[in-house]
Length: 333
Image (cartoon, rainbow, N blue to C red; front, side):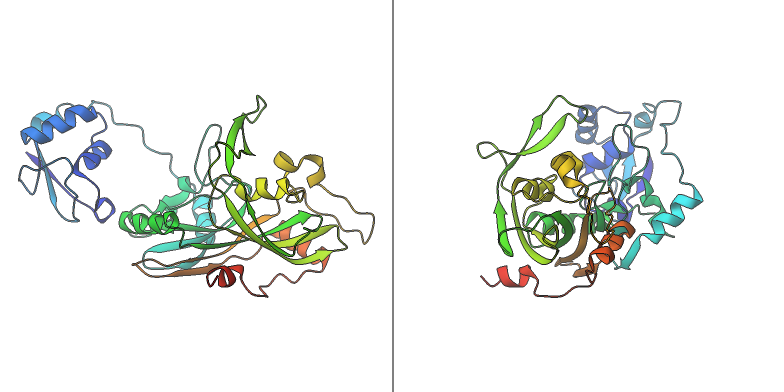
């Protein structure tokens, strides 16, 4: 028999999941049969497929199992260029023992997909340092949205932080520049969201769906406005639905500047006065996050991207935090 040592990265996963990850050439059903027969053991003892693994345990596999492996190795992910590694390291704005906090640039996706060759996930090897543990995504933000993004340094940290998001104890705050001024300086948008096939270039579109949609709740406050034409909003999403903030704001008649997908031409205002020119990019930024978890709290703030900083300066907005966070208000209600 041959044996493997469980790494810190694999600590906490089930035996069958470990086998699926490291022996992808064997059908999952066949793996369960091999585990039941003792061809795969933990610390040289027969065990169940559902057994949770601990770092530094030994997985023993029969020689017959390895004979199933194909002669040619499985394709590996392309290596990162030095430039991309350096850029990814430059995204880090805060480091914790269990996590990194990134300031994700606008224009790069959290994960790869059809037609995408670059993403945050594809660059996580750059954050490993001297560790052999690959960091893991905890959550996602839109490709065209910039700002705070949490990356777990271990699988255990990823599980704990993911649970914090699921339990809605995470406090996220976004900044947006929107068209016009909302009627109420402080308010909430509680409208369920669903997806619809619109038979266009982008097939799926998020819409308000009061019959079959998922719950979606956003608190907001108006920080400042410029001549009643555009407003700086702070947004506090309670739920984290896809495109939630963009759809909610478009629905109340105040689309985010630069959001042509939901706001159309109305999202690209032009002004005759003061020579103010707003970039034709999405003006939505994940400004800060606060997470409480058993591994330790995370509290981080990300500076505005260049195109939003330019818009803030053009409108005379001070790009620093001021006023009471709506989380402080809603947490005591």
